[in-house]
Length: 101
Length: 349
Image (cartoon, rainbow over all chains, first blue to last red; front, side, top):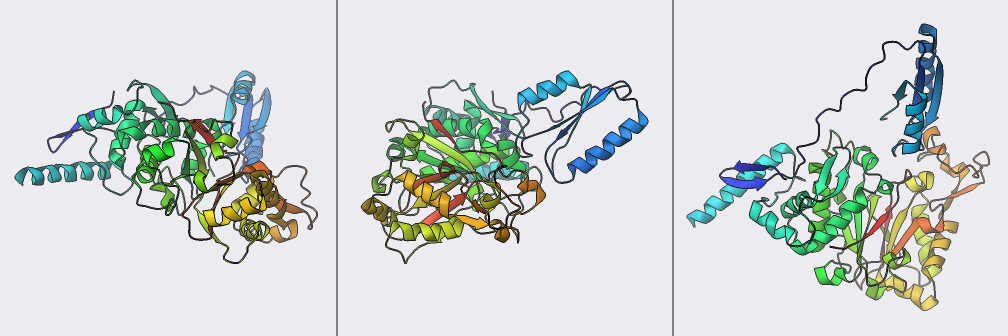
């Protein structure tokens, strides 16, 4: 049901959806990366492979990772398919996702 | 007279509130009072609470009621509701690419193409001035869709919507096909719908480019002009691929009819001839690693003589007739590309 508001004595229905959460809660944090499998999901944007390589090197140097999984979306403009998300969810304890430019 | 002043003052206050909330395209809106929304809902048999789609990236749910509220704001007639419902179904289809198109720096707006008997019933303009102002159906249906991208999709310019320039189509970008002047099957019939169906086709589209041919008297000559316009370094589809829309005016369509060109003939010709060599493409446009990664693997970019078409596949070109009887102006509307596609939805109830 649309929200109503009285403005200058006139009742109007608001065009927005007030049920949308303002913020989406963060995924649960890992206590440690040691013994964990970490996923990297590239969005194909320039330099993402350099950023991910540095992050992976840092994680490997600091923690005893169980494994690493690299996957790439078809394109930065489209959402990752459900099958890919399900695979990462199944294989990994946490996933680092590239977003934006 | 006092009452009228009072009404105008209230409308002014409502608009000031809506402007402050960034729920407007910058123009005044009609206040969506409960009575006006009820009247709008008379245009559909659907339940007011039925969810039609969720608009990225604000994730507002477009229920029938919220569509009606935005329709009132835009100045729609109740009869336009089924068109708006179909348009929301189309833009929330995964193939349309709403999330990416809302935030891109490209200049993208939803281009709506209306086909079928409802074009005449509802008064959509497919003839003189069809891409411009002056026709209520085109202006307000397109506007209502764009308002929903703001109010439910959250694409506030400069914040979520990062388009460098944006474009006039973000006010309204709605046209109908001039089937009476077309030598070809209508767009929706080509896409598998019955001629008696009415449909809306929606594409995430860049601005319309006016293409002039006041020289040629043959179909091949006209297409030479069109192909040259498409295969320029500044046209993203040369690099990205994807769909484009081209409209021919009746005067030029008649030449194709006289010479016996099928729509598929036109598409194949453009696919073959709207090309540049790799050597030329390297000098500008989107010759960068990010875009090159999207090229089909069978294109050899190590050979400077390889040619690449702005229309990767003939069916990537959406061909229709639009415009008034006088004039030889074509319209070229490259799609946003990036894997997004036009979506056609039957207008039901």
